[in-house]
Length: 162
Image 1 (cartoon, one colour):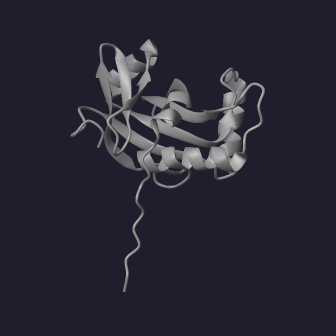
Image 2: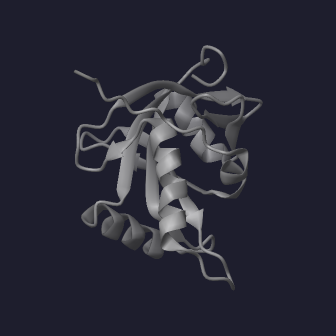
């Protein structure tokens, strides 16, 4: 008898350097604020991209964050967020690096709430997409099974990135 295990691939630094980051403050049904951080693949302005390569890249991000398909019970993936000098850092598994988030209102919301909802889309999205386009992307990705979620806590990760 063998046991199957899933090993998360390390997200390459070049992926983190190019991923789109969007932030907003949402609300629970009870009216409580929830900082949200969405990661997507940037749609190139002039070149074509291979959708399978985009999906593969973003699945690495999903695995590293421990996110699950939207609609499933959203896991609490523990401490993945830190704040340093007014900047939030999102840490990835098995790496010594983090994604910097420099949106002051969002960082204040993160401090107040102590955590954030991480949202990862598998498809590309323009860096200059409007709020309406982002909302449409989220709705379509959710309906198509291409949106992943996780809850991350604010704190001090052990070993920097775990």
